[in-house]
Image (tube, rainbow, N blue to C red; front, side, top):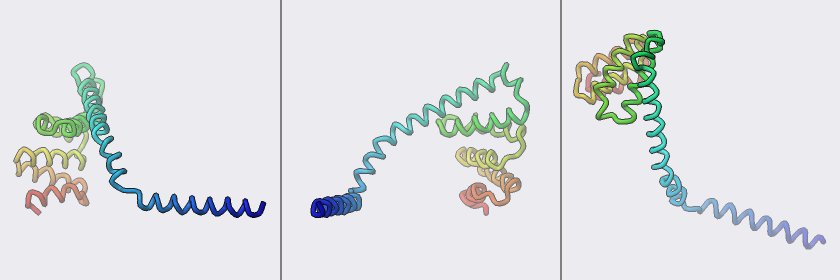
Length: 158
């Protein structure tokens, strides 16, 4: 009986060592392939969800419903809608995102995040002076804003 116990323990030890070796030398490429297969479906799901959220915000900001929102709520919704517009289709929606951000900043108070996004929109449109203003305003609101400083650096203004 002692021999069988020792044999079982040796087999378990050999199995454990084999597992450690297999895990250590398991090719990373196999894991990468698994991740990249799911990446396309994850991106399409995220795009679909962002599009749905954008439609919901557009519905909430439509004429009859917008009257039920207070100024700050409406401003926050406009800022969120601009963020989603830029995430879903940046090139086509920059102009309407700028309109939403300008109105949103007026209504909800000057938020650093909204001003930085406004600066980025201006930057993409080639409106350097407006971008400089937006990033500068973001720094006034949040002096330690890394995003605003990076924006000014990209523009060569700091």
